[in-house]
Length: 310
Image (cartoon, rainbow, N blue to C red; front, side, top):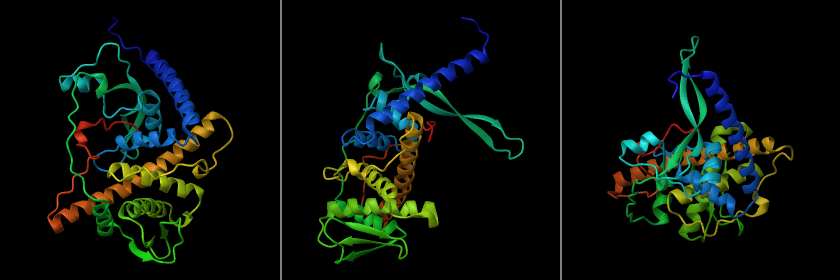
């Protein structure tokens, strides 16, 4: 092997990888967008690659790539990562292409390090000799998550007997409160609060430009689904009917792909911020009540490749 590193060849290789990866991302969007069965499975990938801190480390592009190549993936690592754990890649396994963030040069004016994203290969634990070690977790009732939300959220929660059937809850920005319909069971109310929490996070991020419309409703529905999966709340009754998908550009594949990626990024942001607050509420509940609330969806941060692009 020639010991000289040819940077021009490396750049050409990366360009080719980026083009192939970009096409795969666009093709995946065309396959899942509007599909009432596939799209929730994509959101399952988004949830599984959430970091312990509550911010999703996979990012919208990597969620699409992982879904396309290995939808059941649970934990990715490089060849060297697995080697450090004394595990090895099984013969014949192909790496999963993902975008990985790497530090570049420091900006001479701002003195901030610039980052760039290269396409690299990672392997899921299922492709290695490593053994996953699932923990048996005795989960709590939906009421525990409702209590955690009430402890952590910066909005108030009020019952409203005037909310009509079919509407389980609504976030009212002007009053900074979520009103929930009376008579719901705890499971349904919990999901309603998770969804409205995502409306609240969108309002906090968007400010005066926020309004309840098909886009923010879709982001809140998806964010609520991600949070429900994370905190082990039933998702059986969550329906992704075709009409809940907002309109996206009818132009070329790249424009459509960009629009869906933007929506997924909004889901990641809203559910990530809400998840952090709920986890804070859980910790507060443990402190106040002497409870131990263990979430099966949170995993140690050091067990993840947190260099994946956000």
